[in-house]
Image 1 (cartoon, rainbow, N blue to C red):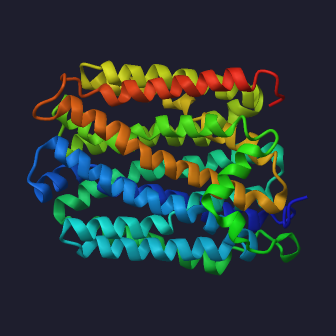
Image 2: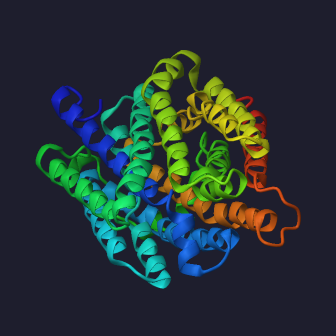
Length: 410
């Protein structure tokens, strides 16, 4: 029985705190997404392809630090508890926002983004907290609550970035720092620790080593076959935050506000899916069918966006996220049910490390493809090409899931 499961008030307060933390995490990414192309065009003095490449470098620096430090943060949460790690991450997020508000050069911008990646494991630690206080059969639904908050951040982030950015480019970062500080204070006052001392385990550098963590994930019975599916699905989904702003600007000639509204719409759809659709659908159809359906719909949507010739069709394809976003909580539920309670932090840290690998590879794949097909001298002009590549990767995830899990009970 999870600790404190009989105290509904404590659990509700914790879920509010965790949802707010996920919201802040995604809001931080959304704040700069609409203005990033124009900002980097101004800084670099190049074309849209150059801006895309520098945006990719910034994402790689962020993801590389997250890749290295995510398992360390996960192992620390298994040793010292989830609450102090989450509070530390929120504090560092606020500091990162303040630094971004005053940065004026590209090198320092890259350094600050790398610094932010060190403390960016809030989603994995929040997921471990949920695993601590939730029965295995209900975790998928509560993971979806965190996903809903993450989607809400993608609604508010671009909106805040667009509105406040029109006044002063520094204001969105001050807003992000303020919200993170408020949530850290709320967590310190009202949220209890979920991992009792008797369920903790000593910190081990062997477990905190990124590569060692990934090797253990692949070798764990019942997990090894699902980890590649999680990775490929995650890599495919990262095409949106990695390159969408550049594709929209090149393909449809959208302004910053139009890009911001499109990202916000994706956030609305993701929020509705995680907060309502998945809560109803996942328990009824089960993990296996959920992953099947979500991946198939994702392939269809990515192809549609890649070949879209008018902007309204993109909105139609994005609406399919009502179903496709089910893949992440479904896979996480299956994985979390297959590890012991005192290893949930290590599991979520490992998944966060895999997400970081996807974040590192996605600029190389998607921004690289965009540069080849949408620059001043493209091999062939097809700015939607990154989404075709992402659709192929998602199809590989579906194929791998079908072949490797055919005989498994999910």
